[in-house]
Image (cartoon, rainbow, N blue to C red):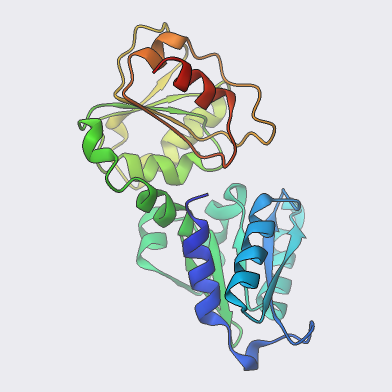
Length: 252
């Protein structure tokens, strides 16, 4: 998960004795989102342990209908919180101050709270971009195929559009694909974003990106193996091996 380092950095630098909440005299942070059993929480706490930081991250399950109430609790009772990708886009308008990346993307994935005021950062976007250093240059600057249209597809698409002439979105959910294109078009050239209803296997994309979160590494969108044979690179946002990566490896 490329965004985690940026998230840890933002939270670690914000730890101050005056912000401790009394939970074992630790600074208390939250992971706000649908996935209260997120791997991110375990990894963040592992980082805190490794750094011997006086901090702990706990799950804060999301309820879309109580979003503003939850935000009030998070703002008052936590030193900071991470936001799952599904809520990052709706978080930005409710944050007091945005860093430059969040201003450019309209999305917030990490929030630091001090004195009742919040500062938002798009660590998903920053982390994803950092993970591509030394990669996109080798992709030849060609069109990019992105699998998936929700969650991490937005920060990934935003970064990929910086260098790719065109971004092709392939998703089993046509409504989400259109919504993603609309969101990306607000902060970029929508004419460079295309939606594919199907793949024949003859397409020649230099790079293929999978943005679908898949915990068990199984089910993959209906992607012909020819897509992988014609691509030079395959990238997956999942921390564990997936059918996407196994298929890519099988096709060189």
